[in-house]
Image (cartoon, rainbow, N blue to C red; front, top):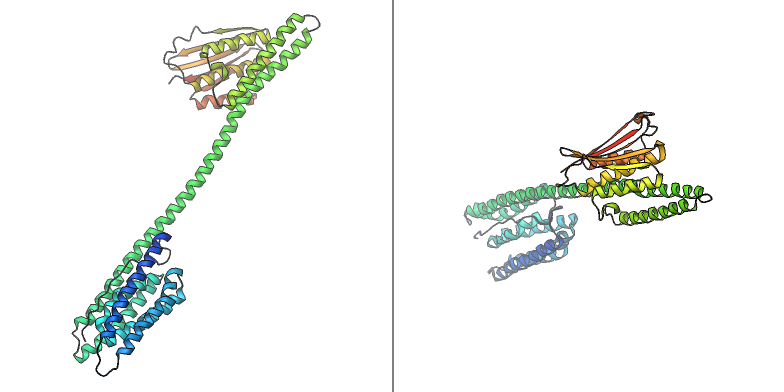
Length: 410
């Protein structure tokens, strides 16, 4: 007999949890069906053509190959597609038996090892299992050729080729399993990174929502709450003036309407996430001037805006910085209205180097800054820090108060 055994190894795409898409896996299974049909069909044709004058071994050879076909359909395919260990073991046992029969009767059909070695790595999910079944399969395929060699009917290179094929299959199987293991590790790492990224995105979303709530709270305090406070004070004043001075009361009612309209515009601007209404069509100085005049009319205090130290704003402030300065002036004036019992208020806007500052100074009762920290000043400090600036409060009981908001010119 002449030995023509060959061996090949194919990457074990179907083993374990190898990172192969379902579409890719179905394609690989179809390729396996085609390869099995082609190689086993060729072996059957050659087995039928084997002439044995004594009529002995040929039926056993054909029967073994037909048993392999049935085994592939009943055991091999389910083991491949369903990852069924029990059927995989049964199919490999049948494969070893068939290869042993083929090697014993007609070693020229050992080209089936091209099919057998790769099938081991495809249906066995573990590396130790693949090694064991590859060695067992190699032993089955070399028994007949070694006996023939011992009788002098077969050259030594026949079984030697089979053993070389075993070594090649083991090397390829182990190498590809190693690659797939690394690929699976990368897939797991990517999954963990995606999970971490999702957690970070959720954390950023929550942080953003919290920041937005804080921003809205500051906006409500700096605009709507101050406006409603003005409306309440003006209404109380108008009520007190109505019996004796209807004209002054009417002026207060007009101011109430003006403040209410501005509050409504501020609310709409807040919903639209736009800048303060006062800055929509005016410069920062013009907005401060209107704020000063309205405060004077509402409270009756001597109020003025001093721009002597401003110099030039040709390079300009960003809109966020203008908002910080305007809100700072509004917050300071609200505190004057509520707490200062002042008779005069001065707003100053000035620039020193790359810093623009708004000062609101009153001659009221003053307070101890270390022992008083309202939500308004706390929110104002947060807003100023976001713009790269700061807020300073200077006051003493009986000595008035000066609030300074400053931001850098960018």
